[in-house]
Image (cartoon, rainbow, N blue to C red):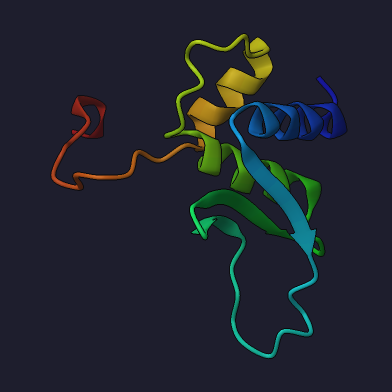
Length: 101
């Protein structure tokens, strides 16, 4: 799958999960800002710096979608693989992965 298509598929999945994806220029903000997931007034958002590479945008969006309930939705295998590749479980940091040892 082409990188542009993969990113678009992630954005489409975000829409199905009621996550608003927006690309903003962080250069003029004057404060250090990082792309990522946030909740504003109870609504989920993934705000991405439009000046980063397409690969990095894909990574940021995949990380944001990892913990959201997408198991019961049809997701293209390449998209599911990307989410698994970049996703980091949130929550209990004491849990360890047996493959880490």
